[in-house]
Length: 159
Image (cartoon, rainbow, N blue to C red; front, side, top):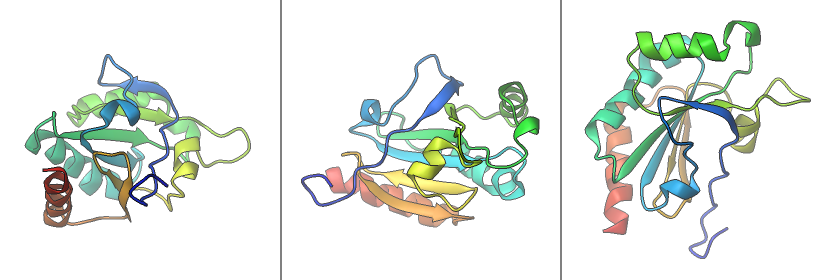
């Protein structure tokens, strides 16, 4: 808990970042609302809805106020979803926001960050406020308008 009573969002545990020269951390994003999109490139809901939604968020909101981060979190079909395949996927789908590769777990098929957030699967969208508190976590498809409204509300809180 932090001083406002909200739960601090767990830090991301990734092996590699794509689409960025920096390795973003949640701590480095303080002061911004963070939209964390967890996906798998072989997940139909991710490909058809989640990834395009995250790209829209990245394109629409000012980058100095909202950071969109992707998390490729593989809990099935591990052999088919390696980094080189992900690079091709990001290129083909024109994904321009930073994407981290969730660290595989030594003792579970569920990767590290996915475990930290107790995600049920993909797609999962997480919203973290400017102070680093976990404010929303949705599993499955969420309407664009609802996500945009919630981000606008989080931005207004700090104003």
